[in-house]
Amino acid sequence: MTGLPPLPRAEDLGDGMTAALAGMPDPTGARFTGRFEHDLTRVLARRHAVAVSSGTTALHTALSAVGVGPGDEVLLPALTVVMTAQPVVQLGATPVFVDSDPDTLDLDYADATSKVTVRTKAIVPVHLWGRMGDPARLRAFAAQRGLAIVEDAAQAAGTSRAGVPAGAAGAAGCFSTKDGKILWSGEGGFVLSDDPALAAHVRALRGHWLTPPPGSRPQERLGLPGRMPELVAALAQANLLRFPALLKRRRAQAAYLLRALAGARGLTPLQPAPDETWNHYSPLLRIGLPRPRAFAEHLARLAVPSSTGSFRLVPCDTRPMFTGGERAPCRGAAQILDRTLALVLTERDDEAVLNRYAAVIIREAAAWRA
Image (cartoon, rainbow, N blue to C red):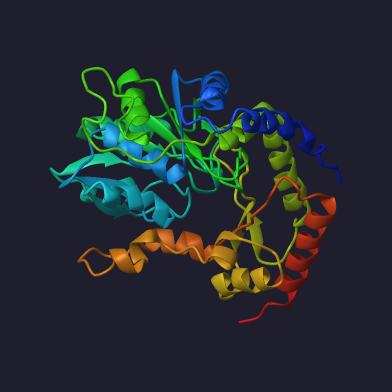
């Protein structure tokens, strides 16, 4: 079995951190944040990048920048984490959950169409597990209804579809650099956009409106404590330089593990779309065993981590803060989550770790009974 490419040198992370630390304390320091933002525009090919404190902050500032506010509605898939919906609520708007197609993992556009109202302001596609829906269909749907597109691409750095990179399908792309992402810095995030006005709004909102956009005055409105700290930015920038190697390693890890699982009872790898270049954030397998969610939870107890087994991911429309309405549950999203083994990897997982995962999964799948 083909081995993995080498793990990028951890020593390469230290120099920037040391330099950032040497410049502290500096209440106005943003040298490394500025470098990170500059390099993001070069590596990810957008005109503007704004570094923020988290992926949630990225969504909050971007949704605010496209005008989402009290009384508005925002479409987002039930196939997501609660952190996608949280900024919508914090802005005074209402999240409206849309179902997903179990065959493609993309939005169920018939369901989305039925949920558009005069109050619908934006749509937030979520590239869960790094998988990206059809950007042409998304753009057409949004354009026909006058909706802004703000992508939750937290897990999708390095993915593209039909030549469109994740985060480039709409007005803004929102990313997380929390630990566990391929491009990581412990905590943090960023917003990508080609719109200078949107980027200026995000930049102002992340820092208490101290750096206002054109036509506004400093602290004319309330903002957020949403800046990326210099130490985090130094780490993020160092990892951005390693990002091609980190992305190559993740794809190789996923391929290695899926090859090791070939022929496992009741498990079928999920394949990307023909025009999709997937970052392989999580190796994905369809579980064809009895009680599939229970199987994922069983594996988690045996130290094989996954989205549903370890983190108990459920459709967002079933979370307590969003239940109680009249809308029918998003059954496609529930089916996807119940039947998908989304394995959790880190860059440190070597052949020995992946072989152990494969051995446990194969053994337990063979023994699993109703």
